[in-house]
Length: 251
Ligand code: NDP
Ligand code: 8X3
Image (cartoon, rainbow, N blue to C red; front, side):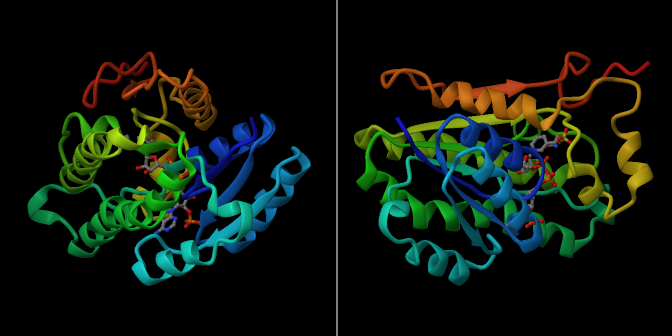
C-alpha cells in the first residue's frame, strides 16, 4: 500500500537515501532540509521514480517555522504514515574544557530540540492516520561515549531516551517507534563536523570500509515493511571493521 513518508534532513546522506528507497518502492515523500536547490534536485529525482513529492524546507531548530510548515499540509499530505527524524549533525570535536559553546548550542538545538519540535507537530497527524511508524536516527554515540564526543554523544543519548519514551506514549495508538543507531558512515557528516575541511573528513574513513547511506536506508526500509504486529525497537549498525564507538580496525 502506498504510504506518505516524511523525511527530515533529506538533502544529503541518510535522509536522501531513505527518501530514494521509499520513492522507488511506490510511496509518496515529503522532503525537508534547509538547502532549497538540493530539495529541487531531489524532488525531480523522486518524481522520476514515480513518487508524488512535497517540499517542506525549514530549519528544524525554528519552532515557529516547524509548526507553520506542518500546519500548511493539505489534502492527502496530512495523512503521514512514516516520520523519519533524521536531520542532525555533529559540530566540532573537542575536549570538554575546549568546547565551543556555539557548537554545543547548534547540536542540542538541532539533534534534540529540533527532533522534538518536529515530533510534537507531526505526532497528532500520525495518531489520526493510524498504522503509523516513527524512525529516530540516533547513533552508536547514543549508546556509548568517546573522547571529545561529549556533547554530540549527549544529544544522541537524549535521542535514545526520547525514542524509548515515545514508544511508551504511542503504545495505545499502535504506532511503531524504531531507533536507528549507526556507527561510522561516510556521508557529509564529517565534512560538517570539521566545518568544511574535506581532508580531515576524508581521513576519518581511511583504512576501513565505512557504512554508506544506502546501507542505512535499506535497514530503515526493512523495518518499515515488517508485518503490522512486528515492531523493531532498536538497531545498532556498524561497519564490520568497527566493534563499538571507540574501536575501529584500520589497516
Ligand atoms: P549529512 O550531513 O550527510 O546529512 C545531514 C542532513 O541533515 C542534511 O540533509 C541537512 O540538510 C540536515 N540538517 C542538518 N541540520 C538541519 C536543520 N537545522 N534543519 C533541517 N535539516 C537539517 O549527515 P548524515 O546523513 O550522516 O546524518 C543524518 C543523521 O544521522 C544525523 O542525525 C546524524 O547525527 C546521524 N548519524 C550519522 C552517522 C554518520 O557516521 N554519518 C552515524 C550515526 C548517526 P540541510 O543542511 O540542507 O539543512
Ligand atoms: C556518528 C557516528 O561515531 O562519529 O553518529 O559518533 S560517531
